[in-house]
Image 1 (cartoon, rainbow, N blue to C red):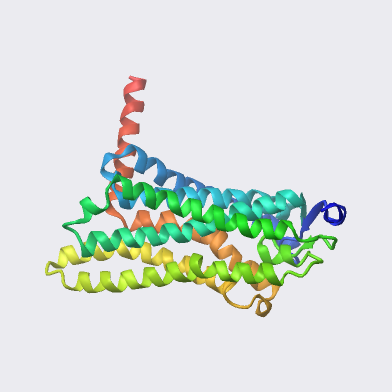
Image 2 (cartoon, rainbow, N blue to C red; image 1 turned 30 degrees about the horizontal axis):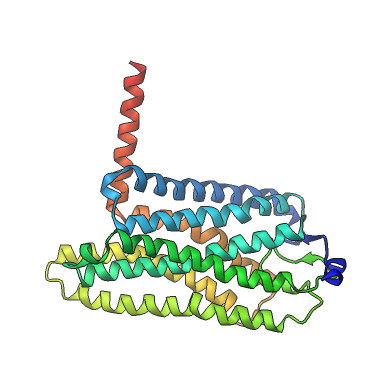
Length: 317
C-alpha cells in the first residue's frame, strides 16, 4: 500500500478537443447553450411532475427520476468540459477524476435501469390495464425507484475500487474531455486485464439484459396495441410509448457503440464524438421528446404558465 501511494500520480491533464483551437469560442457557446437548455428542460419536467396533480402517476414519477439523473450526469461533466475547451486543456486531481468517473458511471447505470423500469410500467399499463393500479402500488413504485439507484451506485463502486487499487505512475495525460474508464486505465502501469474483464462482465446485467428486457416488453406492447379496436386509443397508446422508445434507441445505441464494442477500433476523435452523443445530446433530447410528444406535459406546462402569469398580475394589482 505504501508503494502504491508513492507511485500514484497527483493530477491528470485533460486534453479535451485538440486541433480545434480556432473553434473553441464557438464550441464553448454551443455546448453552454445546450447545457442550459438541458438543465432547464429536465428541471422543468421534475417541477411539473411535482406540482401538477395530473402528472402524479407512475409513468411521470419515473420520468422525473430519469430527468434528475440527467441533470446530475450532465452537471458532473459539462462545466469542467467548458473550462477545458476555453483553456485548451485542463487539470484536475486524480481523486477528483475518479469521483467524476464514479458519478458519471453510477448515473449512467441507473439510467439504464430506469429506462427498463419505464418500459415495464408501459407494459403493465397497456398489456394489463385492469390490474395496473393494483400491481403498480406505492410499494412497487418505491422499490422500482430505489433499486436502480442502489444497483448503479454499487456496481460502479466495485469498479471504482478496482481502479483505485491499480498503480498510476505516469503518464498523466488523458486524451478526452472527461474521466471515463478507458482513458483512466490507459494511465495505469499495472495489469488492467482484470478490471477490463470485470467492467465487461458488469456491462451484461447493466446494459445488455435491460436492453433485451426492453425489446421484449415492446414486442408484447406492439401486439397489445394492434389488438386495440379504437383507432384513437391505439394512437394514444402508441404515442405514450414512442417517446420512451426513441430515447431508448438513442441512449442504448451510443452506449453500446462505446462500451460493448472493442475500444481499440475507435480513434480518440471518434470516441469523443460518441461520448458527446450520450453525455450531451441524449440529455438534451429527453425533455424535448417527452414534452413535444406528450399532451399531459404540454397541458401541465401551459397551466403552470397561465397560473404564474395570473399570480403575477394579481400581485401587481
